[in-house]
Image 1 (cartoon, rainbow, N blue to C red):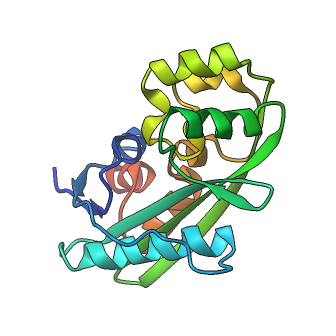
Image 2: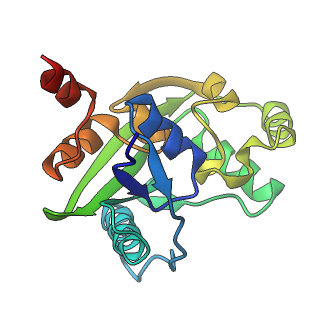
Length: 197
C-alpha cells in the first residue's frame, strides 16, 4: 500500500487516529520552538504551531505533510504539560468542577498549499479529590499530556461532558482533517469505494 501522507509528529495518538480512518503515514517528527509569543491568543498559538510543524515536515518529505497542535485553555490561559507532580496537581485542581477549552489546530502542506483548520471543544470535569489526583499522577499518564490528563484513557473518569469533537481532544479533529486531506487530493476510504464501483 502506498503511504499518502507524512505526519510531522511523534504523537502515537495522532498516528492511531489517522489509522482509524484508514490512513497509513510516514512519521517524521519535527523540532520547533513551541514558546508562545507575547500576548498571542491561544487559537493563534495552536494554529501557528500546526502550520510551522507542517512546513518544517515538508523539508523532510516529498509527501503532503500534516502538522497539528493541541492546547488546553482555562480562563484564557494555556495549560501546558506538567513540569512535575505539584504542577499536575495544580492544573487538575483548577480544571476540576469546571469547563475548559481544548483547542486543536491542524495544517496540511501539499499541492493546494497550506490548508488549515482549528477546532475548539468544551470539556467539563467533575470535582476531583486530592487523593484521586495523587493516584492519577502515579499512573504516569499525566506526565506528557497538555492540561495533565488524557481523555482517551484513565482521565476519562473525570470528564462529565464534552461539547464538540472528541477526536480533537485526543489530538486530531478527524472530520475537519479529512476535509483538508481531500482538498489536498489524498484519497480516503469513501473515495476508494467510489473508484471500485
